[in-house]
Structure formats: structure tokens, C-alpha cells
Length: 129
Ligand SMILES: [Zn+2]
Image (tube, rainbow, N blue to C red):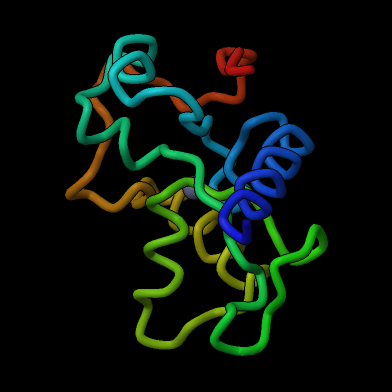
């Protein structure tokens, strides 16, 4: 029941965000990584990093609730990285961190760079409904 509720909130958030990650604004994978990989010229491993996840803006460990206001849709990479930093940043600070890293070409981190023929430009290439 709770899981179903979370998926529902994730879907609402993803739609509201035009299927872009709340942090990095890259397209998110809502279908299968295989079709996403094909569409964007990625390996499946990279496509999996784009999987749409439900992000608790205030983490559950800090009392964050599973409700519409606290759920954003984030790609798997951003969701995982946010909680892996030595000092966990609040959502706005993490988004700013990701944008700074993008500006200097370090997001996604070098060990998970996209293939050269893939563009993260904000074009209408999402089309995932
Ligand atoms: Zn992201």
C-alpha cells in the first residue's frame, strides 16, 4: 500500500517536472532501461542511472513524510549521490552543487559519462508518457 502510494506520488512529481530530474534536469527513464538506452544512444548501464526514483526531499531518516510536498522525481544517479556525499546537503544545496558540477563538465561524474553521441541539452526528446 505504502509502496503503491509512493509510486503514485513519483508519477505525479515526474509529470509536473516534465519528466526531468529535479536536480540535474536530465531526462528520466520511466520505461525500461533497454528502450531508453536505444533512444538516447546509451549503454544499458548508463540508462539505468536515469531511472526515475522518488526522492524524499526531507529524508525519511529525518522525519520526512511520504506526501506530495516531500516527494520529487529524481534520477537514480542524483538520488544515490545526494545521500553519498560526506555531508548530506539539503535539496536546494544539492541541486546547486549538481548545477555547478555540470557547468564544469563533472556531472555526471567522470566514471559514468554518457557516450559522446548523447546530448543532455534541454530539448523535447523525452516523450515518455
Ligand atoms: Zn539527476
